[in-house]
Amino acid sequence: MSVLAHASSGEELPAWSLPAEASGRIRLPVAWPERVTREWAWGGSTGAGVRVCVLDSGVEQAHPLVGSLARSVAVLREEGELRVVDDDEGDLCGHGTACAGIIRAIAPDCELTSARVLGAGYTGGGEILLAGLAWAVEQGFDIVNMSLSTTKRNFVERLHELADRAYFRRTILVASAHNMPVESFPWRFASVISVGSHEESDPLAFYYNPSPPVEFFARGVDLDVPWLGGATLRSTGNSFATPHITGIAALVLAKHRDLTPFQLKSVLLLTATNAGGEA
Amino acid sequence: MSDLQAAVAAGVLGAEEGYRSLLQATVEVARAIFFAHASSVFMLDEEQDELVFEAVAGEGAGNLLGRRFPSSTGIAGWVLVTRQPLVVDDVAADTRFSREAADSTGYVPKSVMAVPLLVEERSLGVLEVLDRRADARITLAEVDLLGLFANQAAIALDLLQRGRRARGVLEGSAELAALARVAARIESVDASERAAALQLLAALERLI
Image 1 (spheres, each protein chain N blue to C red):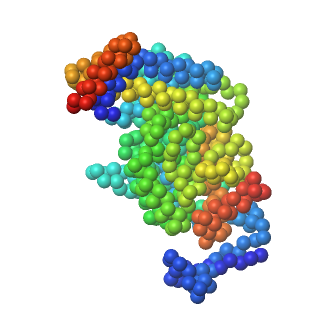
Image 2 (cartoon, rainbow over the protein chains, first blue to last red):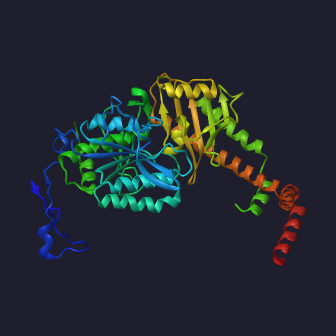
Image 3 (tube, chains in turn blue, brown):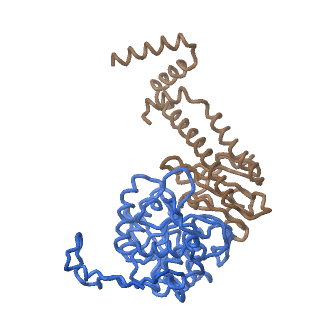
């Protein structure tokens, strides 16, 4: 077993270079086993203490498969300005509730927050998405689930900047890929974890894709997801594969609080079904 | 596209009916391939923030064309805003969708496959396939197939919109309409006349 080093938080870190005398200050807290197993990665974890934000259409309060939310906000345009306000409208369509329920099923004790960025009409949607993501990064969530994307190129630079900011602040963005012949974002960025679907029915089966941009495949076909009015709905889509990876990431982070997005992605690789990972 | 380009384009583009037929053929084939009850294309009207039935095959073909609803409602709306294909297999279990569907179309499907119509960076609308033959669970191959149809429908819808925009420009300008007629005429004359016309245009270009 090797123990890697780490800098305890609060110490002044060398930002751009590492002088010889400083090397002892960047000790890493994680003791990696000879073989990273699922048992080591998330065995016994329930996701407790991990803060997850669902950036979507809102989440239905008190859905039996979602449980309680830490907070519910919406990005609204008021007098020409975008504001993030507390919101009790819930979910306007069911999409966000479905995602939240999938995360809850895998990581039952994680803390869920809903940020509603969809539902105010199509026009202006890109700005609202950006404002919602900026808010989530600012709030320091551990994980942000984004089962959505934009194709608008004029948002790409700001979206890219936000994704990088999240990466460096240890906020993990998990984003849905799609199989359409166009470019969309943010799932194509290397700083996020992108997810497509596989056809198996095991919610913990996931695959690392050695041919990115889609990096992981998770369950996304023919599954029962929570929907409006306390109901469930049999659905298919990468939108639902994404929260599976979010849930698994929450389990890992709850057990290994200090993992950076890079380290977490490595743990996902090492525990992927096609890398010998097993339940 | 500038007004001048639009005018020339309007002169040489085919009639709207051509693109409408292509769109209609796409939904007919989508319906047939999936052994579905119905298939439709919705076009996004960005100005009104509404989705419009632009082509319908099967149930509703006779009376839904032109029908509108807000862009972020229903499964079509959510596919449009998330840019993500979505398949739902028991819509009837969700009373809200059932009611919306019944109100707008008079028909409540049991299953819906919906996929966004994307051209470059624009979302033009949504393709839906309703009540496909459900003798087996859905496969990713079917979702991919739906994506291929969506690509074709998106191209047809894009051409339809360009044509309409170009013709819209002509309605406001007699000079541009004349330019469009000249462009159309050059397209239709025989080779020697066309060569002469193009020489004349080249001379005009040098002059201005």
